[in-house]
Image 1 (cartoon, rainbow, N blue to C red):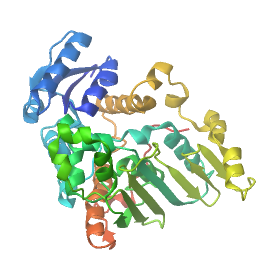
Image 2 (spheres, one colour):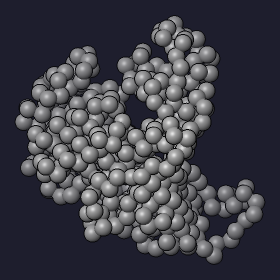
Image 3 (cartoon, rainbow, N blue to C red):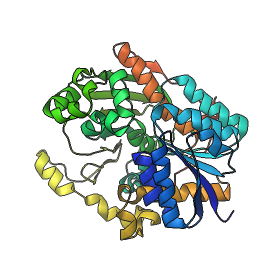
Image 4 (cartoon, rainbow, N blue to C red):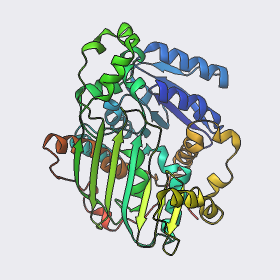
Length: 410
């Protein structure tokens, strides 16, 4: 296959920008079909493809028509609620879905995704870009090499101030607003959990066993709306809106191997962006926040200021030996677009696996188990932090499945 015939389903902020900044930069893919529930978004996307490639794609507001159009694969960036439905339908039609990240609304959704994959034999890739991030891949390679010893604890956060995006949901036709009004859960777990799951070989010799989640009160969005009365002028429903989603949600996952994972959702209070990817092992640790490595035998400082000053960015000295070539030789142009370059690396891998028939690095079992966190966390929060058991979506196959990194590491 010289060129992949791709359909893009979902042309909001994420879908359109991925098509513009990443997908259309690859010569071995043609976007032959575009779809969104809003016709103006479809028209805008078609105009961009015409400008960039000189062709007019098939345009529709019905994703099923894309699946029937003869595409090899689809990139799905619709609202969270429809990810599983469209991805499962694609697999049952023999079309490879690359599905954007989301959390599941029910465990049954996750099982439907797995059934569609196993019954059809069609591969799927969850497009979790943080699995392809520079710091995450560097730390994973170091962990594989044994520098941190036996991994005991991992931590990650989706720390991202989304108050403006959420509050303007009706104004910008964005799905997050209705979710924050109606749900209280770890609604976006995969950015932080995906790279951790790869380090711990989840679904490949290890698995998630149980989860507990607790949520704070919901005050951040209410205050933000009160401080920005212009929002209510554009969307009067915000004046009386009540939000279910807690401002901070902490989730603890226990793994079969005995490791503990702490996840934090933090999107509705003022803050700077941070995924807080952290590994702690018997011989050392990695912290994404300070891009630092601490190994057993390094000098320990009781004063946090001195400790941070002496370890800040010291992970850079390990890049020559452990950083993968995709990051080591990335161009300035690639870094300048779409999340610092990791979207491009992710999509390159997706295209390569479509063309060579290889195993998808973030497969259906990864997608199901990571997405399940959302449904289980909602249940745990509702029950006052009661533990919830994780399903084994592999039906026991995880025991003998060999480890697989998202790209070949050093």
